[in-house]
Image (tube, rainbow, N blue to C red; front, top):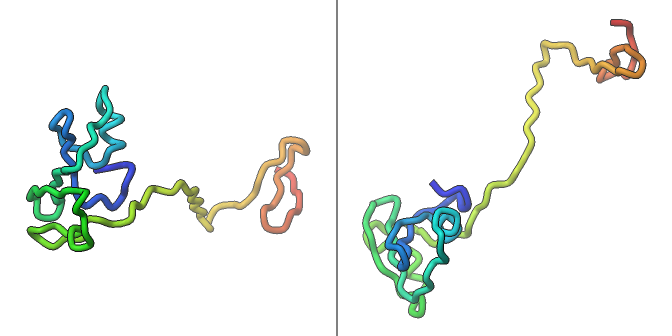
Length: 115
């Protein structure tokens, strides 16, 4: 599974080392050489598991689909977005300890009280 493109529908075969990768960035991370540029790209569809070739100089809109299962593999790349998730248990005390005053401060009302 590719960590660079979340919706990768095909794998590509690198012409230089004849190995399969989910994207060119995966090749860069796993290999000690640059990927060889070529007009011909060999794909493996992740839906039907069949291979096919495409020539990028002759690429048309109909070439955005797997010729075997019609899976639309030429999609906009979706990259992971970092986000922070805060899970709050409403059954616990929502108090923050303030080390300057050595008292706990209520999160919702802002009132100090002794611990």
